[in-house]
Each structure stands twice: as structure tokens, then as C-alpha cells.
Image (cartoon, rainbow, N blue to C red; front, side, top):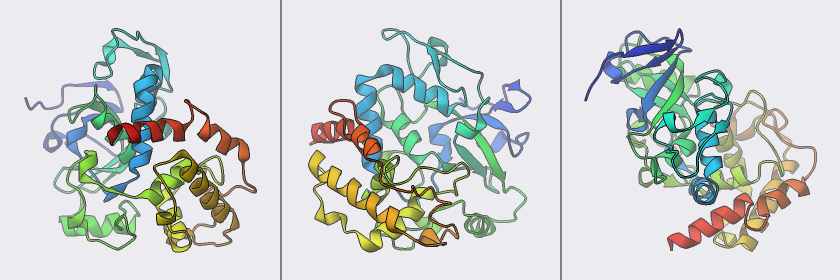
Length: 306
């Protein structure tokens, strides 16, 4: 059932349905949306990153609710019940802070001239929420309005501005340029191409690099553009832990060797993009921990799919 503005939680936190009635929203506001209301701005995701989260949530219910709290800007989980708490119902668990207290942890949208919401950060997290058993297309989550483009006169002008502002990623999973019309029109993993290079950037975090305090939008994709020029992931068995270990190691070593002031066309240096000084073996060991490492969760989940 369509509803207009129902109420304001705080001065900057609004619950809004549907997009067309969101006239009172301003840049910087925190609003609640359902996942089916946001439109992607990138054509691919790293399936393996999504598989890791789904695999972990199957075995670590606390982590699931902690992730939801963080996505809503609430720092983390305060309390929940393994038997009765439901991810789809925020009244069944408690977070450490109020919605929107930590905007820096939240995902972002922009508003197009036609009133639609375009997701500019959070494609992996929101695809996890869409896919998980207690999620779905109507899963509610709060986002920050990063920019309002409703003053523009057309959708063509909107896409020109999105490109100029770096708010869309118009390269497919093979690194080839695409046009905005080729972007997915909805979340849902089946609507996205699988980019293994993007996955390797996620799993090489804390090994060869980490996200800087002020990352550029689509940070990992810029890194991926550099990696795909030098490393052919078809040479690795990404269905096995051994193969993934080798891939993470080689990707991280390559990242550490980069000496550029324009990573992937970002106009940022390798250091500005989060490059480490040296290889972090502890970071790799943590990823590979038997049963509880990110790679272990991912491989186990992916294997069960086949």
C-alpha cells in the first residue's frame, strides 16, 4: 500500500514511501527505504563477497544483526534472541545507538530528476539483505541522501552529472565501458554480472591494502582496473581454498608494487587509495582461518550451491 510521509523520527531521519512523494527530503537526510526502491549504479558485484556474508550469517546469527545495525548507522548490536529475533522486524532486536547516529557507516543514495533513488554505495550489502532468508525485496533499511539531482531538467543531464561526480561505475565485469541504459534496474544478485576482480579486492583487504578514511566512490573497482591489467584470474582455481589463497597473495603483492598517482583512473595515488607498506601475513591468516575465516565461509557456501 502506498503511503506518503508518515512521520519524522528526528529532524533528519524520515520514513518515506514512495519515492514520488519524497518532496520534503533534502541532501544529508537519513531516510528509510525498501530494497526494491533503490536502483543500482554499477553493473557487477563480486559474488564471492556476497557468498561470504551469506555463509557467515548461516552460522553466526549475531553477525547478521550486527551488520543490520551498522548499515542503519546504529554502531552495532546491543541485544537479540537467537530464537525469536527476526532481521525483517527491528522491534525484535536492539542496536547500540539510534538510527542515523553514525552516518559514515551508512550506505548512500542520490535522487534523480524523476524522484527515483539511485544507490551509490552498498550494492554488496544490500544484495546480501535481498538474498538472505529473512531478507527480500521489501527488506527495510536506512540510507543517507548523498546528493539531490532533482534540480536537473532531464535524465540525460542526470547521467552526465553522475559521471562527472563519480557516482556511477560504467564498466562491466570484463572492464569494458557500458552506457547507463545497460545498468541493472533492480537489486537481486541475478541482475548483476559477477566480477572476480572485485571479489579479490575485498579479500585482499588487510593483506595488501585497506580502505582509507575518505575513500573515493567505487574504490575497489578502481583498484580492480589496475589488477586486471597484470593478473589473469583464469589461472587460479577460485573454487578452492588453496587457489583463493594464491590469488589473494598474488593480488596483494601486485598492489604493494604499484607506484602510481592515478590508480585505475581515480586521480589518486596508491597510498591515498589505501596501499600498505608491506604484506600483512596476519591479515591473510585471519582470512583463511579454518571454519571462521572469510575465505572459509565463502568457499563452503559456494560449494554448497553446486
